[in-house]
Amino acid sequence: MKQYRNTLMMLLAIALLGACKSKTNQVDDRDTPNKGTIRISVDESFKPVIEEQIKVHHSSFPDTKIIASYKPEVECLKDLQNDSTRMILIARGLTKNETAFFESKLSFQPQFAILAYDAVAVIVNQASKDSVFSIADLKDILSGKSKRIAVMDGKNATSTVRFLQDSILKGASFGANVVASKNSADVIDIVSKNENVVGFVGLSWVGDSHDPKQQEQLKSIRLALVECVRCVEKGFFAKPSQATIAYAQYPLPRPLYYIVKENAAGLGTGFMNFLSLERGQLIFKRALLVPAKMNFNKRSGKIKESD
Image (cartoon, rainbow, N blue to C red; front, side):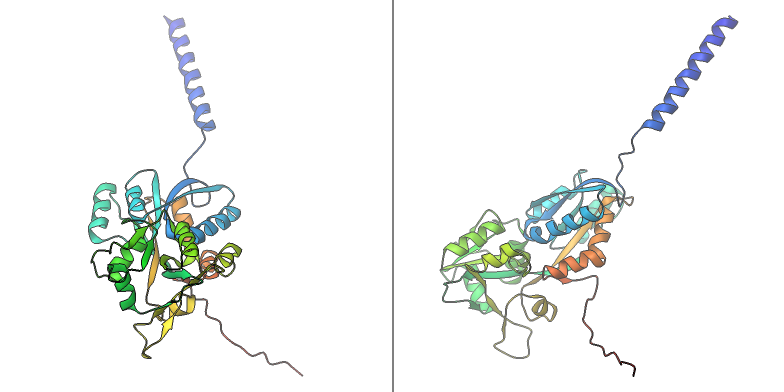
């Protein structure tokens, strides 16, 4: 009996030692703000600037991997409900009902805020005779009163479609002359080949003066001038740019939001911090968006030289 008891105790000791060793060798695969892998969903109209953000983030934090899926805004919001996606980047925040839903489902409130200000750019072919539009002109085109063809980056689920329907048509339906392309790149391609087409894309696709590809595109397309509705001076028209967005001269600005659902500080929080702080904000600025978190105004100064 005593021998049996000693054998049993020895087996228990071996089992406990093996468990401890296994626990010691176990890899912690939880992500942190500076390590790990996550998937995010991004509104396709912001793809150029977000790809640049991810590229710089990976070079700064080599132990991280951010896998971005670019898709319509509605699909990004659907992804937020799934466990696989903890961060999305779209052109709006959450409504009260959406916030209440996530609080009920997840037992905590997702964080969201504006990172930068973008704009919906109106583009036309270089050979187009008309590149100056009033808001009334755009309304006629989008409603079908004008027979000029308008090209969107999707049918009814993109932020561009939602924005134009809300801000220009005030909720009314698009006309039969409004057609959907596959994505923003396809809008640019269609406009570059057709003189009588008006396209609508996010500014980050056509406004980056540092991007050789975008500069090449501007040989076949051009940014249209749109009526400033808030200017004291009547008859003022503006192209989308950092200055015209910041000074409310361009009438089609829109925000870029992050929405993060993490109950502990993970890589989603880390990437959000990167986008919100100096390096991320400078990348938005370089892409000709207007940074919302940091002010980069230039100040002139004088240096008095000593005799």
